[in-house]
Length: 400
Image 1 (tube, rainbow, N blue to C red):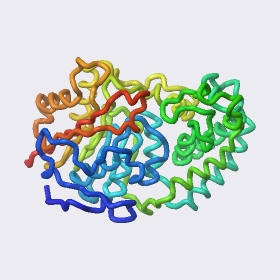
Image 2 (image 1 turned 30 degrees about the horizontal axis):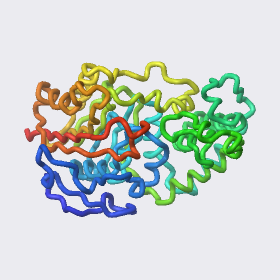
Image 3 (image 1 turned 120 degrees about the vertical axis):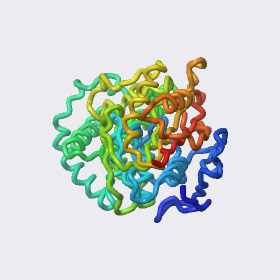
Image 4 (image 1 turned 45 degrees about the horizontal axis):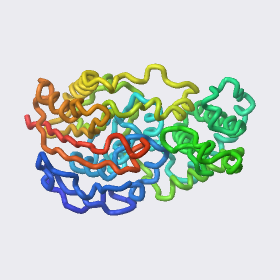
């Protein structure tokens, strides 16, 4: 790898802060601890505003993503992320001038990633799109019959708020506007007045009517103006502007085992589903229902409660993509620890076993193993339970 400076701007223009980005040589011991520049707290204040378009469980730190992208790729290189989640890695890569191919099996993840990568270039353009789509959605408003909406969904909203939100959702689908749909999903539920639901949690949806009883907090149970809150959302998203032009990018809703092979890939950087830790359907159920007006029936393509299934998933994806990685290119995995079954094999051990035993992966060798603490704010479980450590494995392909 070429020598990197120890302090850089992570992209060429308009980043909120300057970030230190040490090279692998600074922490290339296989027992190295977390690089200090990744931080131990939330990175919200350092993020591009678009990274906050909507909540997502299990998202990686933007500071980590920027560092890994910078250390393994150059501007113009192709980067692939087959488990893109809410699009942290693809968006940071695109802003830094890399070409991007991203995908996920989860419709909510795909909506968020597309929204970031194909967002309007300015607040004025976004507001104009919102105005036109809102006017069109009023025609859909006449067709909303809440009797077809499940009771568990209706429990979160005032009837008129729900009718208005569903009408806008229908217009987003009709015009294939994933950006404005993501904005709607981003204000769907929370306990704050700027959101659409009755008092509820921000990440995993559950009502907080015991903490905020209707009799004591009547204002929190009244109809909410969807348009006013969408405009406020746009203002927050464009508080620091995004770049006018991003390189070539593509986002697919696809099982990672069927991800299209590409040649001349410089890096595969991805965070596979946490094994035996998160239920991405249950935890995102309200937003997933809004996307398709029904919960997905076959979304769990891997049972994360079984090591064998996780092993087979990871092996299949790595072998499929490895042939397209060019010599001296990288595969970087961000793997969450297992906490629910202490006797389970750690995901990093599974990954290292795959690289050691697979003939297709033998050209790759481990160049860095790093562990990072997950801030409490990123853990969705009560009392901050769940995965607390991520292990980052970086493999490089040998020269031919």
